Image 1 (cartoon, one colour):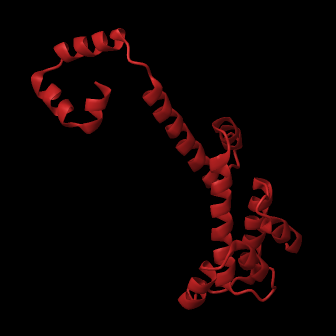
Image 2: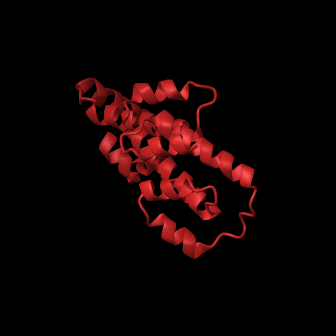
Length: 159
């Protein structure tokens, strides 16, 4: 575990290293089998304010408290999310194809797809064909529905 956590301290650590560090810490937590209901909020708050490198250093101690291990996992997961947010959509989708993909990977894939859809919608050029389609649709809809559509803020920008 020490080697993996040492590698995870590096700000340039790759995703697999960070994920492996999370797994190792969770294994230690399971092996300790401590009562998680007895967590000291003061220690937890203090450890939360520390940089990830120091928290990982503390987590390497065989006598590390549960609070330190919990915060180490949280900080590593935040680092994983940050790294994944920098990846292109295609890479995240490749990672999400893995049947054992972590929840963070799947959540990031959904987020990236939504961002790509927003960009596509914003970049869609205005054309007279779009205008004609919208006008013909508007003529076919009942007045009550059209009035409700006009009330919606996104309707105004789309039509």
